[in-house]
Length: 453
Ligand SMILES: NC(=O)c1ccc[n+]([C@@H]2O[C@H](COP(=O)([O-])OP(=O)(O)OC[C@H]3O[C@@H](n4cnc5c(N)ncnc54)[C@H](O)[C@@H]3O)[C@@H](O)[C@H]2O)c1
Image (tube, rainbow, N blue to C red; front, side, top):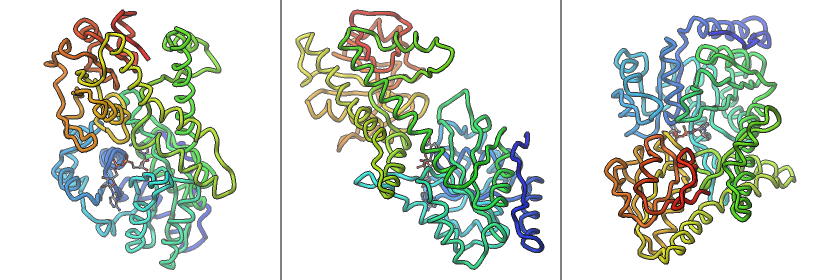
């Protein structure tokens, strides 16, 4: 693939130390450097597969024994990685799987892709990063490059990882190399895959950056070097905050359009015809997944430590966080107009994953909405081709197959995630009353029994 790295290892010290970087660079460019990936989730597994497909030996590590064993048998738990792609890599030994970081001794490059959730008070929980870094510190040897990919606050790589690795007595930029490169993949996106999304890279030293850029150049079309790991950490947070704030803006627009008797979808589509200065975002029942509800708080927490209170982040979260309750109220009002209370009404939730094309229900607003409907006495089923079973509060629900669902038997069908399997024509024809929070039914046109957000 094209080398757009501007990569060099000139920042390495002369002599023996410079040779360490040069040797690693050669191994990366020859693609015989072994890549270790810690955390084989939505981020780590596609990455491990991409390096293995590029011809590099890969060792994947996951602390979840069940997941490690599944992947080690060539079975993928992730929609974006077909088992048909994974299995041959495992069978030929190109990709091996281990249960502990101890197996990464032979790895030339180690990439950390562990979760970064929030704690109870919405403070960053970097305990998975710390655990992974502590494990890497035990096996760190001269000639290794370590890259953190987990989304985190600016300063993590330098303040949390570097001291742990430097305690080994090895010098960063000379004997070992350290960088941050945020993951920007969009699970379920069929237009932009891992190779098409430019990779932002910030290294502790020029040598660190050059080596990390060279590594990613093996699997992506374009690498974007930035000055420091902090800058790269901030880029990722800015991208997600940009989305969170714009989604909040359009959610608020949807609320105002309803009061004005306007269709927010029509307004957005018309505004999006402006060829410059506008980018469409769409409203919905709330934001979910591992990123949008959490990542912005990594920055506001960090800013607060520096004496600054971030306002856009908090306000966007307030509006986006209010959308599930707004959706429940829409459902209650729609039923009320038909003389029915929520209590006892039969409701089918269409889609519970946080976005189309994936089975990820982490922080999905659908779960909050179903929980609220159940608490108010509604009898709720759900259909989602990607989520066979769902736990809501202390209840376990099993998916109703979309194809076999008797839509007319429900008092209300609520579209919460617009999976492509859901046919809007059939939905409008068979359902008696629909709340559509995703404009799934837009192409069918205005229908008296369909209420769009
Ligand atoms: N999911 C996304 O769409 C996405 C996109 C961009 C960035 N990110 C970021 O990437 C990071 C990873 O997210 P994810 O969605 O892949 O998470 P995930 O939960 O799908 O996967 C993380 C994996 O790491 C494993 N793990 C945790 N601690 C470990 C340890 N000490 N050693 C070995 N394995 C360990 C877990 O068992 C899990 O399988 C997060 O920081 C996230 O914010 C996620």
